[in-house]
Length: 105
Length: 401
Image 1 (cartoon, protein in one colour):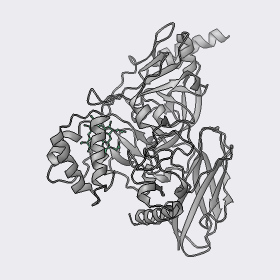
Image 2 (cartoon, chains in turn orange, green):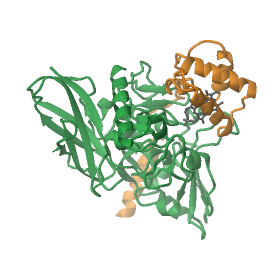
Image 3 (cartoon, chains in turn purple, yellow):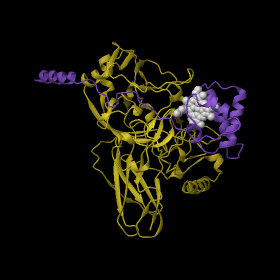
């Protein structure tokens, strides 16, 4: 009996092709995050979009210079972002100017 | 925005006073950010959600959804770490590869997974360890989630144990390295892999292909993901392609540096002085969220109002949810659902009352689990640099008119 049932089940499934709800490539939309324009933006754009969107920067809120320097260094040290010393400084200044809270520390 | 500012200042000064030190040294915790805007753009198989990022996709579920025991698939939160995620899976060719210290290497197709193994189901909460991170002050590292980086679903799949038994584990095997399909954009960035000790595998750990009776949505890990009930979601690897059985633990970035808390009793530290020893986050603590009403809702004086929400923990099960309408002076029991979804799922709760005074009213919800562990007040939660495991008593402020 058990064998019969199993055979029945297999035939039934074999008759139905593997179906997925989504049959084509999914299209992940692009979001235009409202990042601020200003001095150094081109450097940020060149260095900070490789691994994630600007959404990552924006949702942090206003922060100190030390905070932003820490983030840029985290990207370089932990995630191996290939950012030069010169660019690093421009990026920190840009982030602090547009997403800073007025505090150095 | 105004409300958020209000909570921030209120909680910050209260916390500092209690600790008798300045906030900068101590680090404090307040209610997480609430009422973030829902995007007007919908992601594949999703309704519009709170959107932090498109690459990788980071989507948060709005508070209003946390009145149901099972979170609808199209409102379930989304969290990836790497920008390169497959946007198409050929279901006929896809295989899960089992290798390493096994007697027989396996390449299991989806068809085999669904037909050649016992099929099992488990209802379980999936929550990001950083859920509610925006509660921490100063800002803790990572995405500043509100309280919606969580959901509960009925997962269907195959026990990981059964699969490993079929492959046959060799002597000396101790660890599993589970790898998904998300890839870093830059070859030197650490990939997202999770290691599990073989002892962690109980019968509830499954490789799931279905969520609430449907295929997993792509953004939740189609075609298969790991389900580890009671445990934070960084362990629930999505789009699993490979499982390697090993005898040694290999240091991994996300497990050893990212998803960690201080390895001390309070799992806490100060912003200035990080605790040197850390441990990966693992079992979830007890938590509840009010789904209705939301902050800013208007209730009518003397008409019957209802508070609804969800409560859960790491698998001990919820014993009670209590509601306070007087700032935590007195607490009253809410009614829990039958609990038929099991100890890893949300327990929904409801509480009826008649607002008796005009003006602002604070509604607080506190869950207590079967071990007697209960949620602390937000201000009593201790800071940690990753902003993990926040489980403060939820507070919504409504207006009685």
